[in-house]
Length: 318
Image 1 (cartoon, helix red, strand yellow):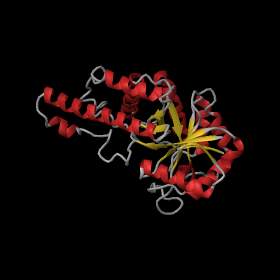
Image 2 (cartoon, rainbow, N blue to C red):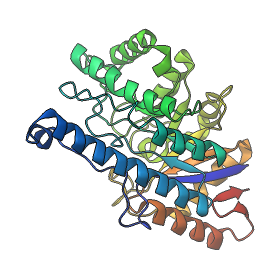
Image 3 (cartoon, rainbow, N blue to C red):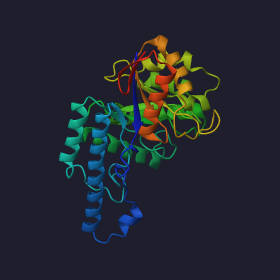
Image 4 (cartoon, rainbow, N blue to C red):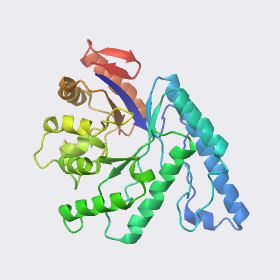
C-alpha cells in the first residue's frame, strides 16, 4: 500500500510567492475606465499564474506529487458584473502549467469555496454554483489536464437531510456532464456524515473524499473501519487512486478548527486501520502550516514507525 502526501495552495517555504492574489469588486469599480480595470485583472492573474508555476517547480524539487490549486487563481473570474474573457489571454501560461503537471506526473485538484451549494433551495445560489464550477472545469481544460477533479460538499440541509439529499441528486443529474464528471463529494463536519455522503456517491457513481476529521466531528456513531472499503471502491474506474483529507483539531477532539500541524500518533493509527485493505491512496493535509506540516508529519512518522519504507521523500509504502 502506497500513500502520497499533498498540501493546500500556499508553500510557506516560498514566503514571497502566492497564487492567490486578489482584486476585490470594490477595488475593481474604483479603477476608472475599462482599460484600467482590465489591466489590473491581467496583471494580478499573470502574477498568480507565474507564482503557481514556481510552486509546482518547488513541489517537484521536493518530490511532492499531490497539490491543491487555489480557487483564487483568476480574480473576479466568475463575478457576474465583470465576466472578463481571460482564457484566451493566458492560453500560453495555462499550457505551460499543464505541460509541467503532466510531464512530472503530478496530481492536482481544486476545492471550490463553501458558498457553492448545489442543493440550495434558492435557484440563484444553484446557478451561481454552476457558474463557479464551470470556472474550475475551464481551468482543467485550459491546462489540458483530464484527471482534474474538484471537491464539493453536499451542502444545505434545509427541509431536512432526506429532502436535501434528494435535491442534491436531482440538481447533480441536471448539471452538465463536464461538471459532474469532475466532482468528488466530501463529508462535512456539521451536516452530512460520511455514511450519508457514501450513499449519495453510490447512487450517483461519484467518487467520495473521506475527510477523517470531519467524520470525528460528525458521525452519528458510525465507524470509519466499517465504511473505508466502500468509500475507496467509489474510485473504481477512476484514473487516479482514492484521496482523503486529513487534519488535526486545534483544541479538543471535536474542535472543527484545523491545527497548525498534524498529530502524527493519531495519523499512524489511521494508517494502521487502512493497512489491511492494501489500497493505494493520496492524503491531502489540511493544516495551517501547509507544506511545513507535511515535512513535519513525515519526520514524525519516521520516528514512530522506523520499519516503514519510503519510496521517496513523500511517498510511504507499508
